Image (cartoon, rainbow, N blue to C red):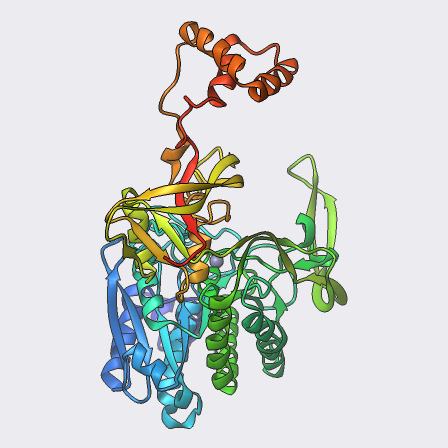
Length: 588
Ligand SMILES: [Zn+2]
């Protein structure tokens, strides 16, 4: 019986060699794959938290502190690194520490900062006393703010993003974008974070993101909180010192950065220029700038690989911390002086628009944009040609101007019927007193003359915009228990943004006062007709304005024509569209 060739000793040896090579090849592939997937892996939230817990077991000078709830039922967790072992924010401020707060996972599909912050924490703790930063800085790291979204891991919802292999979802469990929630506070997450932020009162804040939009050479882009809307002292420092030094520091680390790529006039490509990003108080950074915090938003570029983005996010966190250390005394001093200036200010400036008359030229490292016929749609498509990189000067529009202003009242009156508004103010640490006994006060009030409203809900609200108000002076009868808000307190700018009804993130704009927009009483035309005739006979002015108005409204039905007279008569309800706050300009 012929031996089976395959099992001859010679062939066995040959076979073993092949097998060994094959196995080696497989293990190399697996190792390479694992190494690659490690590089492309963002830690799931439970594991991330575990890593922070492990750090608290290794080092006594860090702590993981649970604060409040989130919409998914888990508490927000704040990781604090404080070399002197003190974790009381008021005491730390008293001792002159500068508090740097790093917020992650506000958009869980953009997880770079979640992993980079853990690396930053490990490095800082491992360095022990080698790093000078810990002598003056205290670090607060929120491992993830939108925990709910972080737990909804997938690899589809960021269609254009280059990794990691899994990430969270932008919306939280109420499908809210938490970076639009800082005035309306719909989510438990935001309520908890605001309470942390007001308690810790960070001097410097970093919010980590990943960009969308154009293609260009940079891995990292940066939004510094818009400086014109800040107090001029802090605004000038962030524009002229803090931001340029971050750019310089990143350049030295061979990771040159660009301002966030927000293109000018909705141009698709950056060539025609960049505009600064205006983050109003609905954004966490815009909210914090009301308290003169130096806020930054890191935006790594979605088309760069995850590990490269993560490394760049770590570098910019380090750079911001190094500059915070270098200027720590100045930062705290400027914040104090800015608050004093806010408290002494006579006017409140609000609703900002881009000042197109002011620009500066910046050097930008982009890729040539090519428009070519689309193979799918009936239009041209945009393609960036990475084989044609360029560096050229482009305009950067970094100035905004206020379109509205108002004298700041000494007090703002709010009827106790708006208890919910009082509670929202208190969450923001606004001090409110109660009227002790029934009394009257002369106050400025506002009628909502006109506004537009979004046709689809925006972040859970029918947001109003382009609000026009008419000012009136009224004698208000205040009841015992009504609210009085002294504007001269730390949250002065927050109070004004919330309670000036035409400010674009005001509580009115977000729909919290919508019941004033509905008329409660009407008339029956067939009876009112006779009264209307009498009203016109007794009121020469109204008679004249009615007949002038009628010239251009002859086509309107009789009810609408009578309504003109009704709405200008004493029978019309005064509370219709009357914003209930009273602005009081004298001492009480
Ligand atoms: Zn984002």
